[in-house]
Image (cartoon, rainbow, N blue to C red; front, top):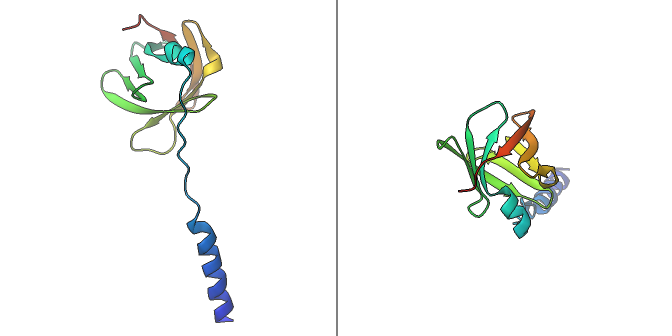
Length: 116
């Protein structure tokens, strides 16, 4: 009996040892890169968001830096020390000078500012 339990444990460990989180990188198409790059302001706030898709980072209010994770549909915004994203913005929601997305469990609108 003990041998069977031990065998089952080894089989389970064998299968799960091969499982690891896959880190895929997604390259932004040039038109999306150009649409995303720059400074954005959140509706109702005067805090600038400086997005740099090349560096895969966003700086909010020149104080806190966040990591950008891109996929074919949109962009996740994650704190550097956390696994759970704070926000998500879909590329198809970019409408010229505004961009709708989710930030800290609420729907927000970002407005593009003059490109730097």
